Image (tube, rainbow, N blue to C red):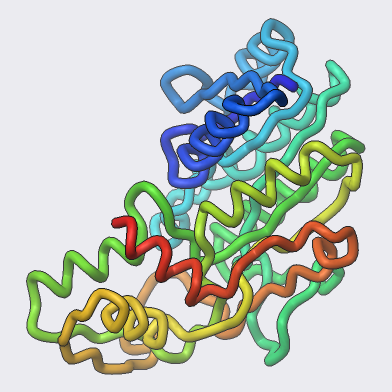
Length: 283
C-alpha cells in the first residue's frame, strides 16, 4: 500500500510516519510519501493533482490544518483555504485516481451545548471560524470522493508543540496556574489516533468516525492529572472560560463517543488517563 501523508511535521503526521516505520519491520509493507508545506501546498489544486497523479497513492491521509483557533477569527480566508479548500483539493485528486481519502477533523464542529457524548450522526453547529472551516472541509470531502473517511478527534497531544508540554513548561516558570474548568472533552494521544487511522484505511468501511481516548475531563482536571503523574507540586486554580476573553468561542461539552468505531470493531483507544501516563513516562 502506498500512502501520501500531508502535514507530516505535525504531531499526528509524525506519529503516523513512526508507526508506519514499525509496520515495515514486518511482512506487510507500507510506502509513505510524507509531505508538508515545503513539498506540497494543499491550497494549490493544480499542484495537488500533479503530485497525486505522479505518486499514485492508494490512500491520502490529510493531517494538514490551520489550527490556531483564535487566529482563525481574524484570518478567516486562510482558515477556509487550508481547512476547507485544501481538503477538497486532496479529495478531488484522490477521487480522480480512485484513491481513498482520510480527512482528520475536530470536536469543534459541534456547539457543545449538550451534556452527553456526541455521536457521529449528531448535527454539526460550529461556534467559531476554525470549526466552520473544518465542518466545510468535511462536507467537501464527503461530496467529492465516495471513498472517504472523516475522523473527528479532540485535545490531541504527541510529538510536538501541545497543551501537555505547554503546561509542564509553565509549571517550571511559575508558582501557580489558572486553568479553565468549564470546558469538557477527551484528551487524546496521537499514538492511539494514528493506530486507529492505520487500521481504518485498510478497510472499505467509509464514513464519519469519532476517534478519541475514552473518558472525559475538564482542562483543569487534565492539568491536575499531568502534574500528579509527574510529581509536580504547584497550585492550580480553576477559572471560567469567560475570564480568558478569548476571541473564539469554545464548545463547553465536546466529548466525542467512538460509536461507529465500536460498531465496526475498530475502537482500540485507551482510557485518556492511561494514554497520558504512558506519554508522560516517555517524555
